[in-house]
Amino acid sequence: MVKKKVKLTIKKSIIFSLVVMMVASIFVYYFSTDSHVKVLSCKNNYYLSDSEVYDLANVSTKTRLYLMPSILFEKRVEKMPFVESCKISKKNRKLTFDVQEKLIVGYYVNDNKNFALCQDGTSIEIEEQYLNMIVHFPLLSNFNARQRKKLCEQFQKHSKILTRDLIEKFAEIVPYKTSYDNNMFKITMQDGNIVYTNLKSIKMLSKYQSVLTKLKGQSVCLVLDSTHSTIEKVNCDDLNSKQKVEEKQEEKTEKAEKTEATDEKTSENTEVQEEQQPTEDESENQAEWVYDDNTGVYYHEAIGMYYDPNTGEYYDGNGTYYYWDEESQSFVEAY
Image (cartoon, rainbow, N blue to C red; front, side, top):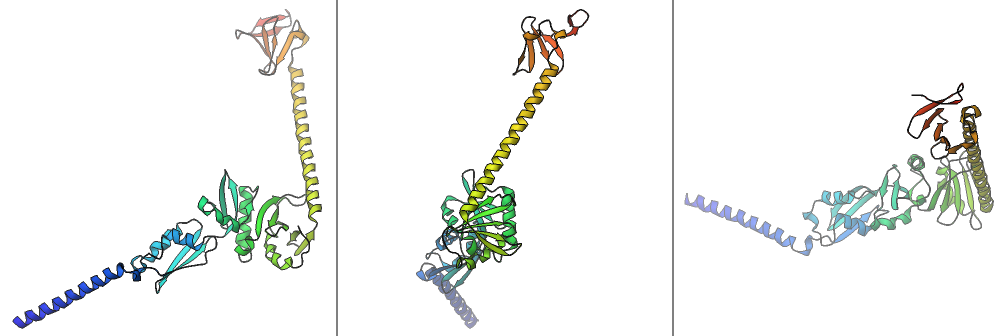
C-alpha cells in the first residue's frame, strides 16, 4: 500500500511539474519577442495601401501572432466598404493578408461629398482619409442616377476587359450629346487624348492601348464604333466646333419654343379677358372698369363694384352679389 501511494505521489508530482512547465513556457513565450509578428505582408490590394490594411486590422510587428485568431483580423478589414473579402494566413511568424477589393468605375460629387461608384452599382462615400485613392479612377461629371446605372451595367457585362488597369487610364467621363446619339460619353484619358463612345461601344476601350502606337500628334480624338468595329481618329477642333454649333442651335430652339409658348399663353389670357370683360350694356361707364393683375378681377371706383370675369359675378365691398338688369338698366341685388 505504501509503495502504491508513493507511486501515485510521484505521478502527480510529474504531472504537476509538466503543467507548471507548460504554463511557464507559455508565459515566457507571451512576453518574449518570439511571439510577435516578424513580417507583415499584403497582396491583391489595389486602392488601399499595405499600411492602411494593417491599420484596419490593427496589427503591427508587436502583435502576438498565435494568440490572436485570424478571423478577428479578417472581420476588421472587411468592415471597410471598399473591401470585398479578406483572408489571412500565418506561417513562420509571417502574417499575410489576401485582400479582394470592389471594382470602382469612378467617383462623383454630390452635396459637396465624394462618392465612389462600384461596378455592382452601389455608391460608397469616400472618407477624407481615403481621398488619395481617387487617383486610381476617373471623375464622373454631370451624370444622373440612371446614367450611372447604365454605365455600371456595361462594366459588369464586360468585366474581363474593362479592368482596373484600363479604368486607371481614364481622367474624366462626361455624358456627351450629339445630333445622332444622345447616349454618348466623352472620356478624357490621362495622357490627354479624348475618346468618344456610346454604351455599346465602351467595350472597345480595351483596344486603346494597342492603337496608341499608331497615334501621332497631340490632343488626339478617337470615336469608337462597335457596330462597324472601327476606331476613327478625328480632328478635335472640328468636333468641338461642331458641338458648339449644335449646342447653340439647341439653345436657340429651346428659347424659340419658350417664347412661342409664352406668346400663346399671353394671347389666350388676353382673349379670355376681352371675352369676359363687362359690355357697354352692363355698365354705365365701361372705361372706369380697371383690371387688377393681383386679384384677377375688375373694379369700378365710381360705383364701388367688383366684377369677376371667371364667374361672371358682380359684388360690392360688403360681399353682396348683384346682377345686371337689362330692363331697368341697373344692378339688382342677387341674394
